[in-house]
Length: 69
Image 1: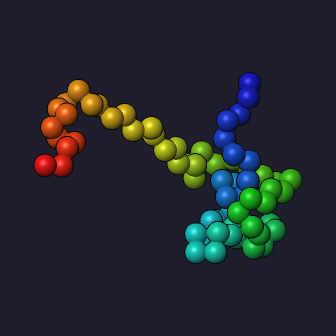
Image 2 (image 1 turned 45 degrees about the vertical axis):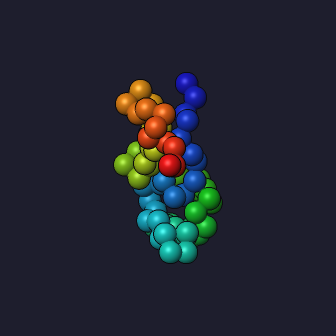
């Protein structure tokens, strides 16, 4: 089985992401970059947020709605 989630300390259960500097405060390694990964990495699914693809329903609109007159 292939895991499709990113492997980095930003999504580790042992770290806390600091968005201002894009760094992670790790329980074991201290302050590290967001893309760093160590041997104690454990994926936390609650820290990973999936962006959904928005579907545009063009059937609700007419051609006149998009013209400037």
